[in-house]
Amino acid sequence: MSYPKIELHVHLEGTLRPEMLISCAQRNGVTLPADTHDGIADLFHFTDLAHFIDVWLMVTSCLRTAEDFRRITVDYAGEAKAHGAVYIEGIFAPLQLVRRGVAWETIYEGFCDGIEEAREVHGTEMRLTPDLTRNATPEEMDESLHYAIAYRERGIVGVGLGAFELEYPPNLYVDAFRRAREGGLRSVPHAGELGPPDAIRDALDLLHADRLRHGIRSIEEPDLVQELKERGTVLDVCLLSNVHVGVVPSLEEHPLPKLVEAGVLCSLSTDDPPMFDTDLTKEYEVAHSLGLHPRAFYDAGLSGALCDETTKARLAAIRDAYDWSALEAPSGQPALG
Image (cartoon, rainbow, N blue to C red):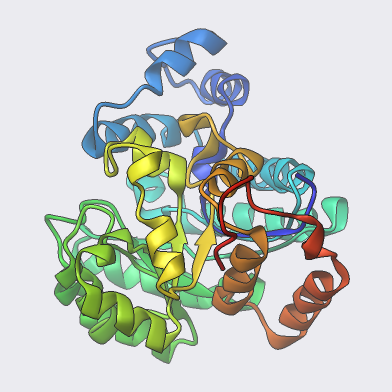
């Protein structure tokens, strides 16, 4: 499927394919539980979200240098472009890397150099939205905010809130997100993947979320669904990852079609593509099989993108130049959105 796509939710550390993961581990002296493609692929069979986080931390431990961060960013831009991506907002979790001894400057320089090179080499526009880590100490949170704001002119457009959603609710981070907004950054917290609908409300009301990462548990409360529609809040939905970590029992039971039918703006993303054996084409094929039209995801992505207005205008021009009418829903299903 070569139509244009906007991806707003991809963890760049989680884009490491098995071969590159093994190469990074060997180069940086990290011992992995497996050293073959099939062995690494076996590690990516998750029992639940907690298991996924454990494996994700193992994977990210292999990244240590600015070259590592630059390379994975440029490589993913090229891969995503092959699946139609014209704009990407990449996520990374700097504090997890700092805790392993990597300097803040090394991390930010590597990722920021990467998005500049991605534009030059692949023509793909990228921006960055690093996660604040929920179990950060006050001192770690201060540093996290300092560096995110300091690199605002290098492509950092917002901050998220990652990991341990049930243990650390949004109300603990009101001051952090206030400071981020004062520093010129937008709010894109994870909420409503594992956390209850109340966590989504708090992300909206307390953290002033400009967009929500996941947010799918909003379907449990019709009033909240209506509020999301009225606010025009975009949900970054990742179909296959939700199923792989057990957040949703099956694709057939995923709330995305109901959310779209209710008028909620939903973008479509891969989350951590090799870890969930997915890519943008697969995500869109699955959504298409559920009766969803790709134009709706592009529109939602454009609405939720945190880039400057000039870039948004270019993305709108790409949308307007494409003949979306050629894409139809599967036979017998109405095209939603």
